[in-house]
Length: 319
Image (cartoon, rainbow, N blue to C red; front, side, top):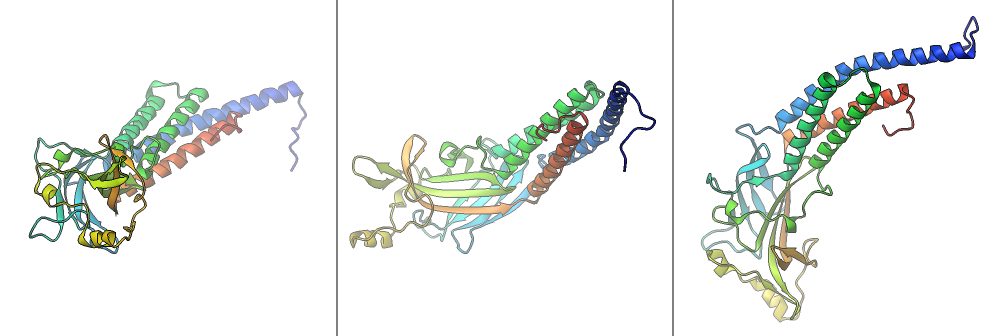
């Protein structure tokens, strides 16, 4: 098909017509983006609802794979863990006399410290920021200014992408377990000093890692269990099972059953090794739905940015 203009016009007139056509295309696209922004706001509001602190919350079952090392549940309300019981069966954490497992219970006392999932706090903050960007773009800015709308779409895309990344987990801003200890008083009775209880979000699932720890002494090159004070568990903890002590007495070496067995960490100002570690992941339907909606919103914004860049003649810019 021919692209010639008939009747022929001068190059100057052709340039004017091309500019006028581009202007009309931009005007049409900017007007249609208002509907896109309204749709994005609805999706973001749904995400905010999924993460809102609404009772009774989400109760998630915790169960270690192919073992009885960890069984229990936690209840999440918004960004907080408000209830939970975990039963542990670990060689380095013997249960109290008369029990078959060691129980960790999240305190229900109104004065107890709160267990907060910081990644969800970050996600909620970013979603609220996205809603503010949408409102500012629709009501307080110049809806006919392509450069303004382009900048707002870029900001919106960056915030949505960061919110989705927080739900996926393992971001640069996420604190490792040894730098993020929970307050022992968040549990009833308080969490033993040789136990690390670490909650995080990974791929929109709640991830729990429980570790038992022992001190590392540089002067001897040996490991000694962390001391306990004020609890009955402290007095019963020996740091080695009978089987491990027999293996050591016969000259054998203790086997490592987890990926951190030979590493040294600084935990609460003390260098420690991880004796036992159990990792449990529990899918959270609300978090999965929120991440899916954020992903859809991210794609919609990316398409809108690309369309606007093309019409503005900025095809080479990041979309």
